[in-house]
Length: 116
Length: 110
Image (cartoon, rainbow over all chains, first blue to last red; front, side, top):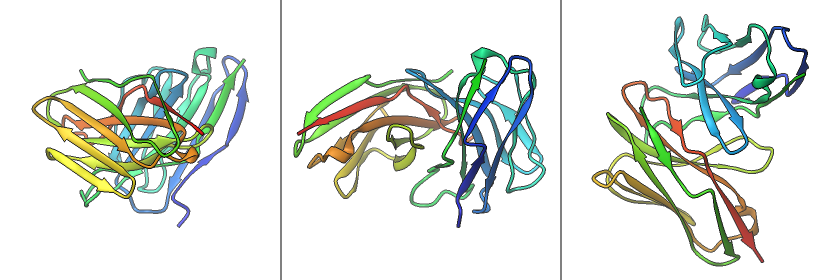
C-alpha cells in the first residue's frame, strides 16, 4: 500500500500560471480532502469529497477547483496562481465506515508551492 | 461556524508528563481527533474521542468532555522525538471532514 501519494513535492509558479496538484490513494477511501498549511494558521480546508462525483467547498475555496471522477484520484487545480497561494498543500483521505479510530485521516507528504 | 482553541506552545523536559488542551465551539459535534506533525512532515493521526472519557494508546492518552466542549492530549514519559506540533480537530455537521485548530508546538528539553 502506497497510502496517499501527492505530486509534485515542490513547485514554483509565476503569478497567473495554472497548475494541477495531484493526489491519489490506494486504500479505497471514500472521503478525500485538500488542506493548505500556513505558519501559525493550522490546516485550513480548501475542498473535500465524500465520494466519486461529489465535491464541496471548505473554508478557503477561492482560486481552487477540484473534481472527483474516480475513488482514487482527487486533483486540485489552481486557476491563476497568486502569491497568496504560496503554501504547503496536503491531501488526506479516510474511510466512510467509522471504525475504532473514528474518522482518522491519512495524509500525503505534501506539496510545497511557491508563487512568485 | 466552528472554532478551536489550543495553546500555541508548550515546553517540558524529557521523562515528564505534559497535557495539551483544546476547547471547541461547533454544532452537530461528532468527535475530537488529535494529530502529530514533525517539522517538514505530514500530520499523522493519533487518537479520536466521540464519547466522554479517557482513551489510552501507549504513552499517549486523549480525553473528552462533551458537556464542557473540551478535550486534552496527555503525553507521558516524554521523549525528545515527541517534539512536534499537535493539532486537535473536530468532526461535526454531517460532513465528517475535520476542522483543525492552529496547533500546539511541543518542545521537549533534555
